[in-house]
Length: 150
Image 1: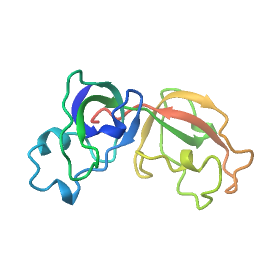
Image 2: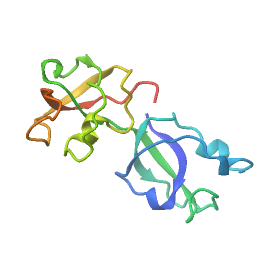
Image 3: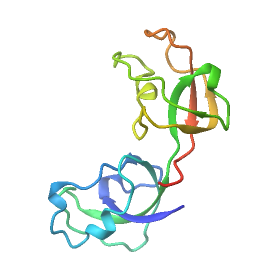
């Protein structure tokens, strides 16, 4: 489902992915609040198109202003237990990992996903980027379907 919203002009390129962080204190009193604050907080989105002829509007949050774009919920790449890594299955993340220098860390703690939620696997990507898991977890890299309420 495509949604029209306003985002910073630096992010306004098709293919750009971001996690919507919600309202900033600088949004208070802005006349464009309803057009900017229309996404689900904590969800990952992808810019699918920049609205043709859209103006750049001044913004207290984005230094170069905001413009109208079309976005849709984006899938989330994540590492899950290998024994649960099947397309269509419902899984949870394995838990936090203190090894931030690991090449898989961004997939073990993916932006836009929570540890206490369950996600449906859209596709199995394969082996994770690490050679060895420091927590001795047997993991597979997958993509979660975007949540239906995004």
